Length: 313
Ligand code: PMV
Image (tube, rainbow, N blue to C red):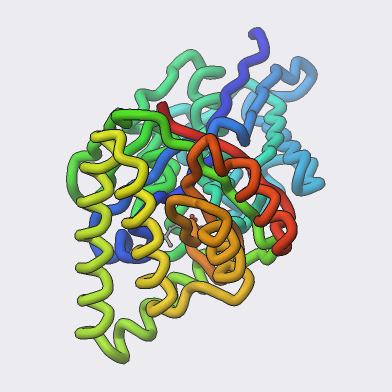
């Protein structure tokens, strides 16, 4: 059997994180500048059923059977074998490498799952359709994050900009013009699970206030969906910044995220907000070509560890 490889991109959420967990609309786009990649090669000297996993970024190199039962890579492999009804796969070596920062709101967990599910199913000669890849990655996300909305696995598996709402058919869309985003990392790692459960506690303590915040975010996602398709960068930026203010009120921003958002806006960004679960991780800024450089410099001088440029055309 020849070696097989599969890749999956990172992602950013343009609007609607957290509210999306409560069945409101959100918009996410893939980020191809960072990738998770899985390469599978046959192990000719090992018996059928033997699987070795090497996750380069995690310094992990172990037989699959020795990983904890809730390990996300083990789950991705076993769920794929289960979906394909394969009891004993030919012996294989699974190598995973990712350039997506971990615990930074860029979807590294979902991207690794998608790349593994794709590679394993292709290696077994039964490549799964995108909806099955996304559904299996969602199962892995559940153990990882508790109550995921499903937006990460969807945008990453489909590799397209999407308007996402839990329980609704996904709406891929094409932007009506060029949009350039800078993604700046605070360098603070924040677990999605904790941010999501913090919002849940505050929502339980004051449901009326949080329902209203979720509704306002939902409306912003709806408006941004229109402005993105119309190619209207100014309005899209405005909705993003308004979304950041609502996320601040939800208690998921932090001083470093706010500082980067303010620095971006002061240096000409059309809009800026935290992206993903918050508490650290990344923020995003929508920039014109004219201001891209000055905003990037401002982000770096205000503490951004890494700045990635991505876009939609
Ligand atoms: O994985 P992150 O950090 O991009 O967060 C995902 C976005 C949330 O809305 C906070 C959680 C979810 O499941 O949608």
